[in-house]
Length: 285
Image 1 (cartoon, rainbow, N blue to C red):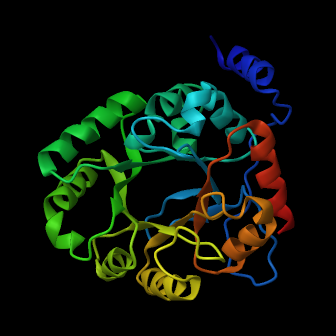
Image 2: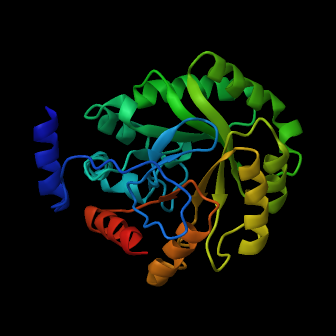
């Protein structure tokens, strides 16, 4: 099946009427009056990785090898729908079970145009190393743009998981990954990440009501500012508070966009209508 046939099936299977040529916006600049777009091209800290402001999350209610996105069977087409609307950031994880879906989407795009971020739950170095090579096979790619240690909560994680960090560092030297970092799920872990020169990308939880966050927004923002001062790339998650702000999306998006601390953020749309609505809301936020 060629790309045209695949996308024709996407439109039929998903009711998608939003396909158009990729939209590439200008590189992000710090202007208080600047209008934002989901497709703004941003740079993640000092990594040099350029991608769209909005990442396509694939792990809503995810865990144990599946998520709301993977359970539909239509995730590859949803990712391609986003790509054709200028979304170039694919957010996946081993625990979501979405690697094969991302791999299918990657068949139909220019690999160097998209950024793939995945996450590793292994805490044993040998298992982490084996997982990295398995990810390459599952994603059917020669490299992974960003790989994170997933769901870290311990304050001493940089000591406890030093072996995994070394595996990631070696993988970067070999060109298997472009940048490494961590997904934090406690304030203590977040503070440790801020102090660690190893962390190049941090996935942080941020929304205006503190839902499913490491601490209250002001506290978290102070830590993120420390990270940014060191040149770390900051990607936001839980922007809608894991559904707590589903009826207050505009408020949540305005907060994320105008916080001044996020390079990009990830939200898991579950169908083309939700995806198009997010793009529209970000443009009017």
